[in-house]
Image (cartoon, rainbow, N blue to C red):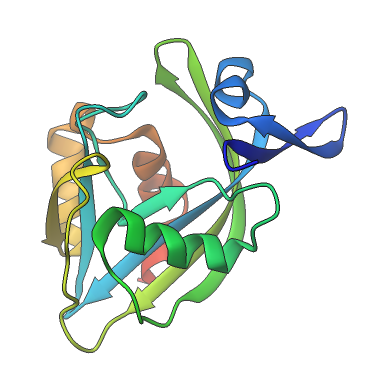
Length: 173
């Protein structure tokens, strides 16, 4: 059931194959993580082989939980799988919903549990090249400026988080 993600069909949470959920635009569960250190947030550039939004910049990590996986466990798992990061204290912030066309006839309609991490020491990062090709640490202002200047290099969900949920991600301005 690893390829099966929790999606709603006729109001009932049901295991659905991940690609099928995106093709049909089904509302489904997801997690997103934002990692901070020394006043900067870690963003990642998605690997060129990703089936949607390849080469685009996104938040620290995001994914869909397996059918029977707890959301915080999912976030911890994915931090390790994508970036080799472990042992950090995740804080749940809120649940939010968005719908975005991610290209290629695919739709992300996600109910996202948002987690943040404030690391006291710079975490060791080991990129998984099938998931991530690069990372960058940016201040909130630098990230906002990059999105304003070059919006096409960012994933739709990161732009949504920054335009509609920045106070949840970064705290009150």
